[in-house]
Length: 500
Image (cartoon, rainbow, N blue to C red; front, side, top):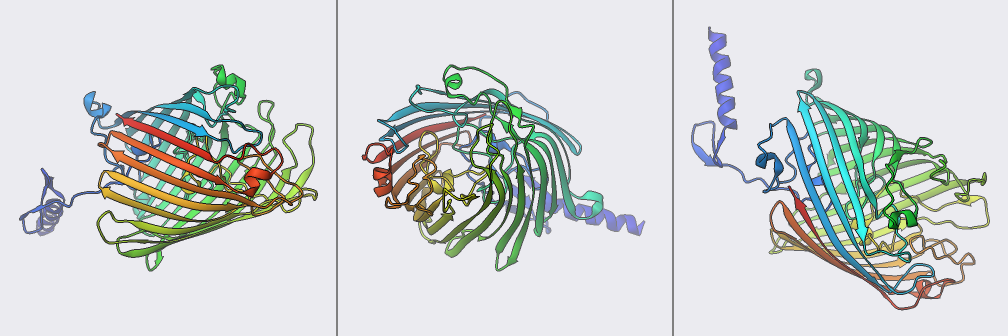
């Protein structure tokens, strides 16, 4: 009887500490006290990302949409349903690409529907994405980063346990089509600004030692977005996406939390083994990509930093032609550094100095390739808007920069960045513009990019964002063979995101 009484008292005491009623909680003495107000990460302007649940860490990283279908339809707790729609208008004046003339405009639209059912430790989910555009023409050069009409980018079965065999470890296995986001997102990312989203068919294993470390391992086949022909995309031709059956993408990713002084560390290795398909001729990349990152998160009145070093080695074909069998030895590297400070004052301004270096090909006439390949990474958060702009990629660049952000109100965010761009190797390409001087005689200064952004979160269901980028062209952008007009480039966009 005494044992039962002690057990009951312990359970009652623990329950009292957890009770929350109408925003008030009871402490261990039975007194009413105000509950701690929860703060949420600002949801990204990427469909469905704000509703992604984390079966091991909890599903409330982002605030629940104030207008949501789950409550409106009175759905059971075991079923999740969300619909999200993003509309953007973007315009470009002054081309920076090889042979380009004039400007361009586009209205990219995304409609996303996500459904997930849960039973004990198991989940089954599907995500439907319709990404299309209006306003492009034959001179726009659209591709499958702009359009992926009416297709499934996720369809999976999953199992998760927050305390496997009472070990204190969490474990999760996901099988099927899925999107991936790892670390800094420089090599593997679920795209945010881009109109289409990377997805993969395969299996992913995740192990979590809470507050200490997390490990992810995956074996997948990248999903090809089809059609991949510009004219078919303009004509609205529909073809379902397919896994690239001749390609394997796999790897392991280890995160360690607070290794010292609040610093977090990441160590990873990815392997890409790519083959040709009739519908998609490739460069037959066979890469190993090891890397590591150390970072300290921003905090008010404190310094923060980030450093990431990535190597890459293997082989790659000299071209994507089906008849080409010439393999080049591939060895490349990438380095990122940033150092910032958040001021403890109104608007919480954050100032950061940044530097990125991505190697380029040293000699176009040897049998080697040193141009860094960003694999399936994102670039908007570092090098400016993508969409119909996307002037810079993580390849053959040498770029220092300055970034300032501030929040004049809790629902408003402002950003400013200024970067200088040089070629890392004079004889290699400015890859995003498809401009190259194989002699290396043209000055390697590409130019300066100035960017402004503003975001307003009306509520947890409706968000607006606008941005402007100006490229001050340098000598390389103006004088290289096949360079477009010398006028600077201006890019502007405004977009909305509606979540239900």
